[in-house]
Image 1 (cartoon, rainbow, N blue to C red):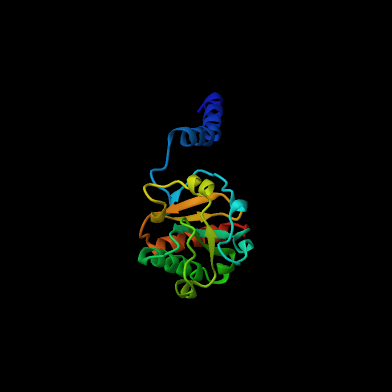
Image 2: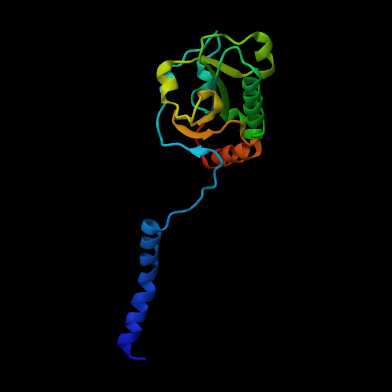
Length: 182
């Protein structure tokens, strides 16, 4: 083999990772993702405008990962199911559950009864600010989704009506393990 051929072969071998990375970055798009929830465009929510519907401390949701659901203050069966779901998902985080807060945003300014909320102690009940509610992306009704908000106040994920709890737990566990926030 001539020295010139050897040199060209060495250059080709050394440059091939560069070309492969270029092709992969610009022309190959993954067909699926590992997260279960729908990944939302990064968009900060005006959490500072939220007010508690009673004397609860709004600071309980600031600086934490927040599982947020929107529903009526009358809290029918589907509302209770969502509150139960987010309570169980938070509990499933084990040692990291203190990094996760739960919030119910009521969109009708009706305060949930004490009887309803006794089973969901620790859930912060907030008034539904129309500006905030309009910024939550939805397919249909806001009541059909559970949202995940990061400690910086950005929307991260949206879960559908009747989500798979195991997959939600897996999403949140993954986020908490790789994030130092919250």
